[in-house]
Length: 122
Image (cartoon, rainbow, N blue to C red):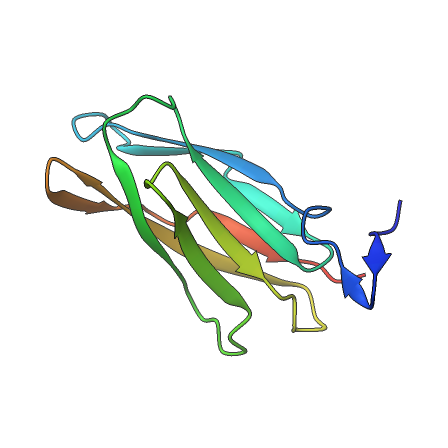
């Protein structure tokens, strides 16, 4: 099914894969991402959610590596329980982007290893 087009814009809500993120500072690994990789075929946003929802840590931000076309805009959703990574899908070629997520627990910041977003334009 193609994305909904309204007044010349693609609906961002159409392409919004969800990634559940869990974090425990004493676990190995500290972070888990389910799924670890998401594929974007259209512009939209990747939604990262805290798992479990009542965890005491909060999202602080994200960095997408090698984003030379400035395709990605991370945005922490108040009060830090969700993180949206807006993806404008500017590159016409299929490309895999690694990203890091930073969370805070009891005033200490922790940064994740590299889950990925695969941009695969149609």
